[in-house]
Length: 486
Image (cartoon, rainbow, N blue to C red; front, top):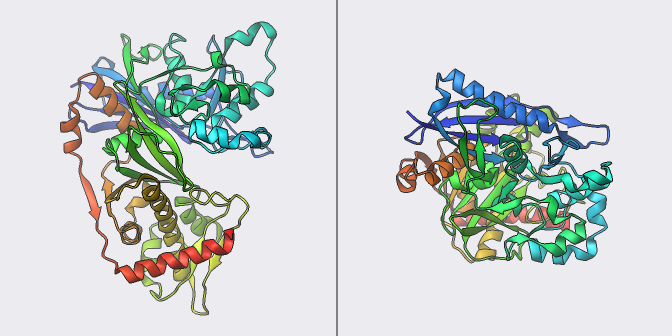
């Protein structure tokens, strides 16, 4: 047998999978890395630890599955997207990476408010310390660099860092999906935006070459793990890789990843669409010289709402209990939870509001609050889907989903009912790693794309809720939102 190695470098750790000639995952290994959080709440990652974990996870998956390294033909990489790294040309980190969650660069973006509309128009992204542009500016302003070393600086996202290290500094590259999330990339001209780079004071010479997502990113032996160098033939941000792994390859196809938060991403095809309804526009990928655009909405609290029920208010002991509790709740109860624990994200974008329980009656109890928590996940995602319909003009028929909470049958049926869509659940959890492995294998001729995606197994939920009840529930949610933001 021959295999493709998929590496998913995510926020909590690094995952390595081996995918066989039939497109099936035959092995997986994980290595967690430290979350470095200081007294100011800044979140950082050790870049050397991340690279070492790529090596260790790769060794682990080979050994555990008794697979000879010579049988691995190529590599695909997916990565936590906005986490930002700085190193020199020797491959030495100049500081820990700033994690996407970290808002230490907020003073930089606050000082650029006058450019907010221009930045959104050029990059498709709202001005925010969430994105790498401000993080890169912070790194440059807060790192002592000798004058004679200033030409040796490399700035990039985690894909670029890994590619650089994996190729011993021979390849300084990123792909379109990751570049489009930096807030330094022209979403229409498909190149680093000189005007935006000057606004953030980021020299373009510090930035990687932007390539198709299925480019040859370089050759690597992974520090001798492989007896001869093999190609890295795919790199994508993790949400984009999951979109590809879900088979959302054409306009109108949507996927939602249910995690701590949620990424809802819609392929809108080859034409740029500027969101007018609280979403951002990015690039899905560039493949064989053609890019696809996406509309995206990111939500802070979806799976984290279930964690709140368990760890903070202690209404449940296990996440699995939520489904039964919601089924036992009074169906006439109209309680709405708006989980704005850190403000509201897409499509509302209000970081000043607080969480709200609305519409409780004297009979509202534990089960009813649990039900409202599950419903809050669905209503938030539905609001993003509604914004996507308005921005794109596309009539959405199906939502493809992945992530741990998709095991909750009550939640998935409710998502189908409220959004009035077919909800299709992938049978694979490792969609980011699988998506990038698939793209690498397709590019190498190892897989045939149509055959690969025709064999995917999926479970489907179909809407069965009456329209009057659906509209009533959505109306209660909107009442609660209006109380907060109007």
